[in-house]
Image (cartoon, rainbow over all chains, first blue to last red; front, side, top):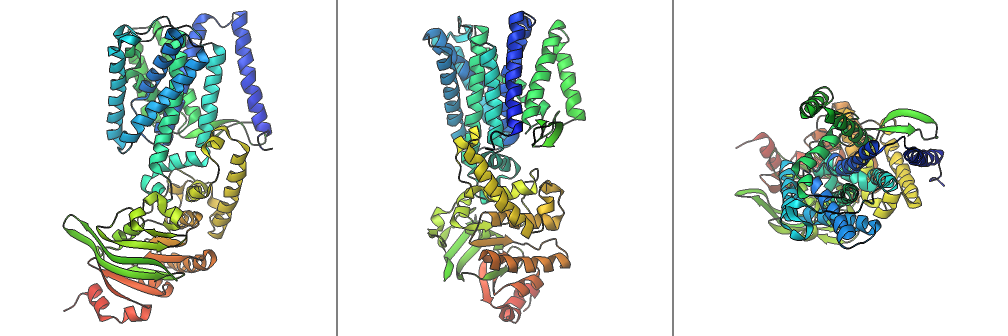
Length: 316
Length: 256
């Protein structure tokens, strides 16, 4: 069986090893609540960046509304767990499904648009979701939704991140994913080769929104409290910055970007007055000296095909 | 057996009649050349044949796997009907490797579903391996195997043309439409291309329609030549007939 290659077994072992190591360190107390908080932020940002990378980096659809999918997930899970008293698994499932349904609904009318027109339309979609949240009393309006139980723990976070990376990188390396990349490269040629471009663009939005919804659920059920402003335009930009910083079309790039930028921004909290200035300067320098992002469109491979340690950067 | 029938085909853009009153039938297994001065409507005709434009009036009927009329044409469905094409200005997927480019041509021949690809079930490996083997065979016949991992944008021009033809063939078409395949090639490359097209016609059992300005290629290769001028069909015949047709000479060289 090809699934049980050395490489896959090593990866699985590594994944489980990291899981148990962190679990152990938290129980012993080496990982305190401050580090835990940052781990949750990093994890959520990884999910958001990888899922947006599928839409923007791989399929080439410029989206400025990714935070809206996260908002839908956060509110869906918040309502399920806080208002209806459902277990977290139901919250996450409803969050993911309602976000991907929103992805489908926004996808069908707007995907006839290209480039900057699509960006404006998704921006508008994000604002609509925010304003619905602000004006809906059931979810607390501008005050926000309170008393959401804290269900997000290391297990949920870690395996959500792993599932996101696993599924999206599988998708990208299949013929479905190649079809998405071909749309980014040349839509007319892709169509002439039999790729149903509308289907694949919508599919990318649906899958991307699905995971953004999960990220929203993890967020809501960690921070007890959500309000519409959290998921505004600036949040969408933050996610986009991670994707561009890490490299469009590189999943490892998005992971690296999420880790680096989340850590930088958490360190800079010590200098509140200089925080945004330093953050902006770092982004500026990266864009000037490495415009393709940290990873470009390359992936970092820990194991080579035979299962030995390779540590090489390889093309896709 | 005729495999393409065009009836009273018109296409206008605003007041410009790009293609008007075209009637033709094309037999299976032929190599048909489509020539004519710039702006004669050749590429518009190709775009009508591949569903990028829909006719203003008249229709196009393919008799390939099944009978399909131009009402049902969509660019992304043409490959399913057995029609593949290349483009006048090369349209490769520049940031993808040669192998990946040709695998996109194979797109509609993949059998596994979305679920299998998301969770990488055993079917994924089986079908990806099959596709890889077939595409590698194709690349070998085009002498592109050594370059399979090169990004398409890094290939020299002549090889980019070849990749485009290989990509179209990977979809296993019955009819291949080539839009100026020899544009930008030197005489040596053009000779090689002539042999290649002849060879793929035999090997893949194809009908080929090609637009070309290089007369040596057209005259060597085509069984049948169609001449367009001002969007209408000016003449049709064997290479000798076309070379001696006074109307054609007038259209190309001007005259009284």
